[in-house]
Length: 232
Image (cartoon, rainbow, N blue to C red; front, side):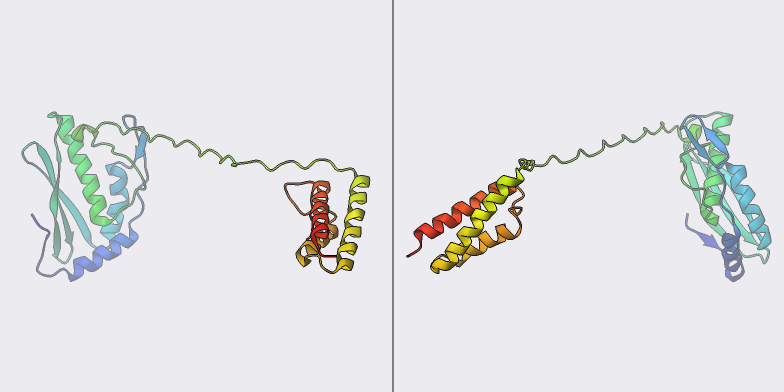
């Protein structure tokens, strides 16, 4: 069955727009022990919908029915002008063939079709008074994801050795003399001299993996080799 309506719906449409703007949010007022959750029952939904409907000349009428193993609910929105909108019937399977089972299913359908027709929000909630009507099993709580492990660095930086300031000063002085000798020679590679000057300017503190003394010693060795190999 499709959505049905009167020949004209100008008045009912305008009224429905106003009612949806005025309808409040249904408050969760019941505890569902089966699903461990709270929900807004039918009375809470009607409490926020009826004033908005009446204000705009609307009435909402619902008609329960029965199919093969199901309970159905037709919802009719009527305006005081005589215009109307009939929603397609909603249905759910009937699991408990008892008075309470029928009542639970009807209450469930009334609540959800009213919410759908008027756009009523009740926030996030689980199933409630339709438990017996639908016989749904409780939902398992989602597994908590383990916190991601902190990445382990592929290597840890080498700790720099403690340097004796006097020894470092002597090595830097030696490096200074080598730089002077290389510049006086005039045939030493400029790259070797520039590197030695850079180490000297930073007092040997230019390599994160080596102490200033080790770095200075490496610069001395490099410049000595360049001096030895240079033409006289």
